[in-house]
Length: 203
Image 1 (cartoon, rainbow, N blue to C red):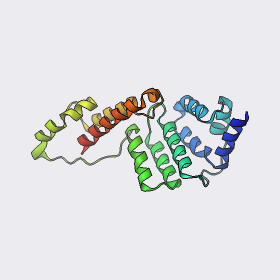
Image 2: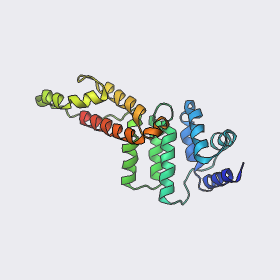
Image 3: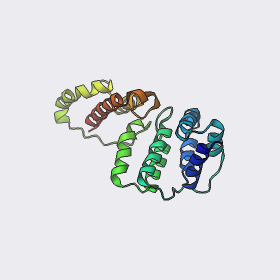
Image 4: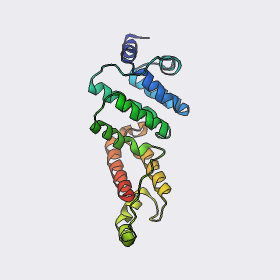
């Protein structure tokens, strides 16, 4: 282990950061290879060190020590990025991530930021209430037609079909996916359109 790697590992261990990464990784074993690549890139360490510290060791606690807000935000971003590897964020991962945000003592605005940014990448969705007003149904369909087109679904699509289309588009265009690293601005614009379409249809 070189000096830079040792410093990175020391920071992670001394601030109890690794257990949070480990817990996220353990929830989706099929994404391990992609997660290993991210961890190697972020902390400039090799496969052996990643496997040793992030996948094989056992840690007694996972409370984040007293680090500043920008470091906490950076760690939270990385936790979300580990969770989205392969197929998006599953409910158990989402619950752990929400728990991490509270543990990190983020205020309501930061929590809403993370929910809005990464919510589209959830593989499962909470049940939302739909406000169906039959007297204006046809007018609403006409107004919503462009939004259905953005999601690529029929105007008579079921709730589940709309959710699935939304999730699949997020998996293609989300700016935090590694495959979109070279087109972040374009991806952000596309995600804004996708989010707007989903919100309009769901509301």
